[in-house]
Structures are given as C-alpha cells and as structure tokens.
Image (tube, rainbow, N blue to C red; front, side, top):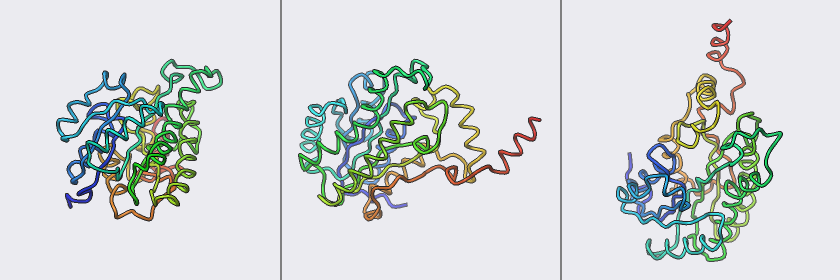
Length: 272
C-alpha cells in the first residue's frame, strides 16, 4: 500500500478523543501517508481525552478551539497555517454532542435549549468552520473537507433523538456549502455516513450494543470499523477523489441498501 497519498499536504483533524475514535485513527493514517497535521478539540473535551499523546505520535500541534465560536475558529486557522507553513488541504469535521441524549431525554420531550446546543455543536459548527475558512481563504484549491454523519439523517432510529436532526442539517450544509466552495475555490465537501462504530462517544448511546449487533447481521459486509473509516477518509483527502463533492457517502458494509438480510431473519427465527 502506498505511503505517499497525502505527501506534502496539510490538514486539520477535529474531535480526536482517544485511540477508539475515528478522528484519532484518521490522524495516524494521515501522518503515515505523509501529511502534516494540526489537531483540535474543545478545551473541555481535551481534558477528557488523550490528544497530547496523539500529537506526540504524529509530530503535530494541538490548537484548542470551540468550533461553535467563530473567534476560536479564526485563531485556529491562523495558527494552523503558521504551524503547517501554508494553506490547508484537508479537514475532518468529527464534532457531535447532544445534551438531550446525555441526559436521557426522549425525543417527544426535548429540552429546546439543549436541542439548540445539539444543532450548534453537531451541525452549525461545520458551517461556521467552512465560512471562516472561506472568508480567510484558508483552504487550498482542490482541498477536501469531510464531515462524519450517520444514516439516522435519512431514517428514524428511536435512540438517536435530536442527533438525527443534527445529522440531517449537517448533510444539508455539506451540499449547500459544497456548491459554494466548489465554485469559489474548487474545494470539495462531503460527508461519510458510517456504520455504528464502537467508539467512546458511540458506545454512550443507550441501546448501542444491541443495535451494533443488529447492523452487523443486516450488512452483507458487516459493520465498517473505525480503522476502515479512517482509510476511507484518507482516500477522500487524496487527489484520487478530486471530482467527488456534495455527497453523503455511505460507508456501512451495505447496511443502507439492505432491507432484511437472511442472517437477520434467521436470528429472529431462532428466537421463536
């Protein structure tokens, strides 16, 4: 396998919490493929994770930033370009949080202050990030921005509550800003709709383990791992995917196209 797909490229990876996270694995693979990167997360998330360990492994710099703050984002892009020695070639948006889910508030009874925070953190942060980069001309031509999404943007999953709405908004921003940034600087913007993944954040959702097994049975290739998602991100950061933009790309082992698999039906038969 090539180790130069991202040779000479500069990137920003958001949301790396610990070694289980997709962002963490993407940072390691980007570094291995020759990229120079900056890591960023909200200050409170940084205190909970191990981002400094990742920085040491990837020879990268950690720049704290609240992605809901345009002031913080301006500082992030300024300092990132100084450290990296030029404009950005790729960005991974791996930012999501729902206070309603954290407090086990059901969808029909949402706290609307929390709901607003879910949308701001998990979706509007992408618009703010892209808008800030657009105004600062911080991304190179043919740059690549990826946001991590989930199929709950298209289908209802009872346990995903207001995060489903946030992912739907996130994917809309991908399409809309993808158009404008493509016309402006040929920057491409896509989202990856990943399988349920055993990350620290994902495992915190009630009923996750049961649904993980369900999706595994209903996907012809099985669930895509965090490691495999990171590899997909690298391919989309590279020049091999230059004409792909404004897409929501399902990376789920075929789950999104499968009605009911034989394995899943057999499992129900066995339970009778």
